[in-house]
Length: 457
Image 1 (tube, helix red, strand yellow):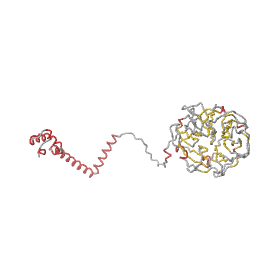
Image 2 (cartoon, helix red, strand yellow):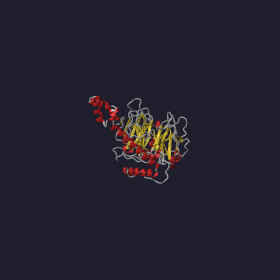
Image 3 (tube, one colour):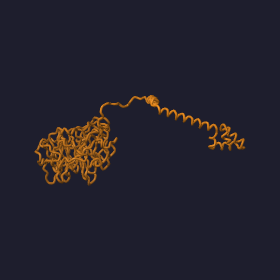
Image 4 (cartoon, one colour):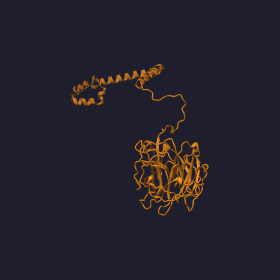
């Protein structure tokens, strides 16, 4: 009753002290309780708040009951928003009918470098990581790998280009460049290609090609280790399922070893591990269907097998390296033309010391040709074409690679074009011979050597 009859908090405190003989602290403690809200001043505040709420409810009910008032309120609020966010429109409204959109249409067109390693790892890096390249050209050497791996092939592409991966089982798999995870540097290993393609156990990539406009029916050449060869029009590759497509009907025990784009070439050469080679005109090969087998390209004797096939370009040499590291370069003009299916001529003198032919590659005559010799244990030796002696056909050559371990041997070679033209401190372009295979690749030199790379002396 004392607190209720007080006008405010101060009066309530004084009344408590005088009436009940309390100290100021005791009176304040009582007022600190919720009882102080019963003071007349607090009661007036609550009554005022109630009156305001009733008035607001009355106003809103009147607003909702009148469509004119609702529209006026919307107009007022919209004008306030316009004043607060009066920025120019960032999008354009078109009256045209919206076309079908796919995920691919939202991926920008960018130049990139695709690299493939000996262990089957593939990666994509921006093209400005290297020197200026032309799309479809053979790229640059610059992929960093583990010590037990080495770069085998690389190519410059647009992110919307389709890469064709040919395997030893005679199948081809398509893969869009943008489907390969992009890396900003050359130091990462990449992703295992078997995680991107449905490869069977024991199925290995033998060639990686980019084919411009396959519907234009460009000819491809495919060769097997048992000496068969086949001409195939690229139009056969326009409708490939992601699960792959058979492009060569292989005999039992046979494997695809090389794939080459013909371009302007007139001749093709096949090389065997026993040192035989045959050069014959491409016109002798009639294009066959995708499901067909091949025809005899070279007659093999004594369990010999083909290690490489490539088209022949003007002023080119045949580079050969043996299992034990002997190599030589021979002008292809010195090889006679034969009819398809013959035994060919001797191109390398094999022996116990030199071993069988490990790899062969057609390279362009002239300076700036860089050769990488890659061993089975991914040891890489870098030499130039000038370091390889130019000899006749039936010779053995000189040592271009020395084994550092007793059980190591040459597995493949890759050829790269050096250039004095630089745009980013690194690589340069090469537009020659788009021939791919396990025993040869074209690219462009990187000035930075791989960690497991040495130079031949």
